[in-house]
Length: 137
Image 1: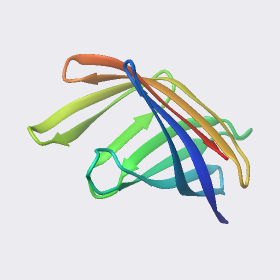
Image 2: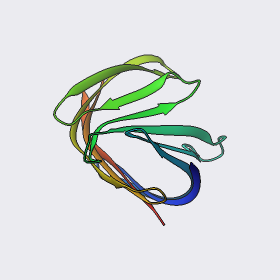
Image 3: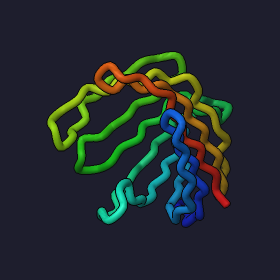
Image 4: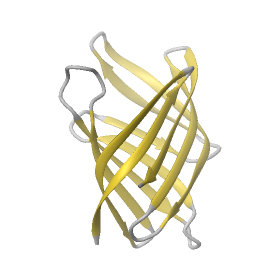
């Protein structure tokens, strides 16, 4: 069953923190939680859809989170203690982004969720700490 929810999202990159309240949809089925929402990444730009898919182990704890922006090629894979890389398209061309996941934590119920992701990004030699915390309201 897909549930419409209101989300409180805190995003952190380096010293910058952005807090948002968003409308989204949430689905929990067969050991996987899927969250879909739209957000504006740049002022004056059209909102983009983001989908976070979380694979859960037998006791319901998250083991892997994948953040995607359909149609853009953006797919960030986070598995605690592992690194993953992707090519990210920028106006100046493609850049390789490496993410080292430090924490993939959360709690998932039929109509409520909490997800906390902490990771280090390497953006073409520039490293910064980042994280996302999402809670349903």
